[in-house]
Structure formats: structure tokens, C-alpha cells
Length: 172
Image 1: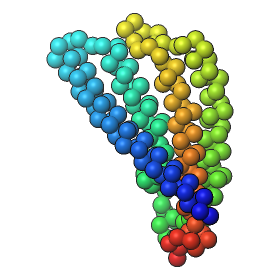
Image 2: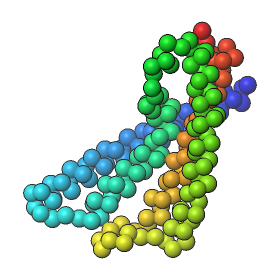
Image 3: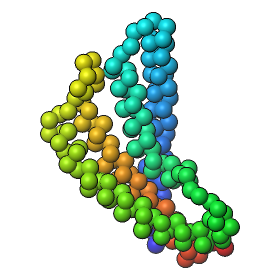
Image 4: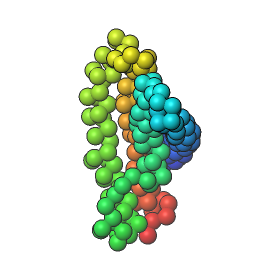
């Protein structure tokens, strides 16, 4: 049991740090969008590299920030019935949902993205647009990375729910 508690603390701490990093990436993205907008609309000087950087950062924020969002309970859920459940029933729903839906879905995405990401790394893919960004393969590598982090945090959330189910922490 002590190892499981350590794992939960470790996974939460790692994704907390990643979440703070993603927060700074979000700030950087806002600054880049602001600069790009000013340059395009006031000075009529657009940049393919800046436009690509905007969606590259958004992709990274979305992919590696998903685990932090899960940790913070920020993912969208339909709470029509869930809000009326006891703490233990909520823990069961989340525990089973993680094991039946979240983790298998993450595994499918990781598996199915291997060839896509591998091909990109093999050719050291770059932007096809003139003035675009190099190293697109690094961006594509964020797909399996983000889903590995999501599994990592999903296991932590499942364990927290298991603790509630077993009456180890805060059950009804």
C-alpha cells in the first residue's frame, strides 16, 4: 500500500510540474499570437513561422497538459447523475471509467501513432511551407508523450479512487 501511495504522490508531483510548464507555454503562446496579430494587421507583415509556432504550442499545451487537467479534475464530464452519487459511488464510476475507457483509449492512440511519429522521425520532417518551422517530428512526438502522461496520471487517479473505495481516504 505504501508503494501505491508513493506512486500517487510521485505522479501528481510530476504532472503538477508539467502543468506549471504548460502554463508558461500558454503565456508564451499568447505573446506570440499578440505579436503575430499586430504584425499582420498593423504592419501587413505575416510570418509562416509565427503562425506555425502558434499551433505547435497549442498542440503541445493540449497534449501534455491533458494529464495535469485530469489531475485537477478539469476535464468535461456530464454531471446529471454523478453529482447525486455518494463519494464511494463516484470513486467506483471514476475507477472503472479509468480502467475501461481512459487507459485502453490511451493505449490505442499510442499504438496507432507509432508509425505516424516514427515516419516523421525517420525523415526528420520539417514544415512543407516556405519559412515554416523545422523539426516537425518533435511536435508529432508529443502525441504518444501526452498519452503516456495521461496513463501515468490516470493510474494515479484510479488509485486515489481505489483508496476511497477501500475506505483508506475520505470515503462516505
